[in-house]
Amino acid sequence: MFKKSKMNKFVPLSLLNQYIRVMKNIFLFCCMGLLLASCAHDENDLSKAKLKGKIRSIRLSLFEITEKDGTPIQKKINENYTRYNAWGNLEDETSYVSDMIQRKSIYINNIEGQKIELSVYDKNGLEYRFQYFYGRNGKLSYMDDYDKDSVFRRRMLYRYDRSDNMTGQYWIMPDSSVFSSFIYKSNARGKPIKITQYSKDQKETTQYLKYDKKNNVTEAKMYNAEDSLIAVVRYVYDKQNNLTELHSDYDLIKGSASENMRGSLRGNETFYYDYLYDDKLNILQKRSFDSEKKPVSMEKYRYDEMNNWITLEFYSPDEKLIRVLERQIEYYEE
Image (cartoon, rainbow, N blue to C red; front, side, top):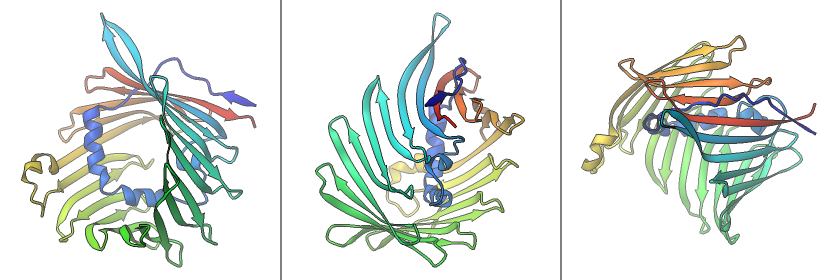
């Protein structure tokens, strides 16, 4: 019933841990806008993940590469196994550490392919459960959150304008109070350009996003509750819409009394990226550089016959292989 993609025997690579932490901090404040910009209810889960073909399952394994007496040693760090149904939507996901199950997520979809329930289990059993409800236009109307004992904890309400652009998300508690909310304003193309976060009835942050003609985010600004600018990130892309420059300035303690955090929450970062492509415009190599154009990391990719990557290798600044991701992909028969 299934066929397996041909796995290249040469294993993949990854980024430096320190670099990953820096990038996560830089991108954190605009992630809500990017998620909304990428969510289309008529896409299946494979499309959202930019995966090609009718995929049945993916086994993703992370390896750490060390040396002993000059010989490379490959040690598995963790593994994730994901299954999809014939319509390209998630069935379940299981994560492993040392071959022991750490967490499992089980999805239930309706006949329209919409996700209606998600149950998440840890080593001790059910951890929590979400139930999803949709309106007549097919848009998500609300999501209910239950604990491990199936006790209702809160509800996320979703609101839209006449063009079906999201205008708000509200966490409603059992006593009907609003715990937190996000309020959105979109442009004519349906992309969020302003996101305001509230905690109860108090404003916390406001984010502004700008886009190019291809709907890539080119600038993200974040303001605190007093409307003081605390972070700016600017993005530059190549013709394939891959990021080539990232410039950030941030002062996340402006208006805060937390003096001891100034060193880690104030500064600026600049990164540059270049790419090598194959004749199908798949990325073969990606290199990252700091503001002085010094190497930070390098990634190398290998692909199967469906143009999904199956090995990703991460190299240190001195081009030493440090980590590998392997992806074993199983396809439905056509």
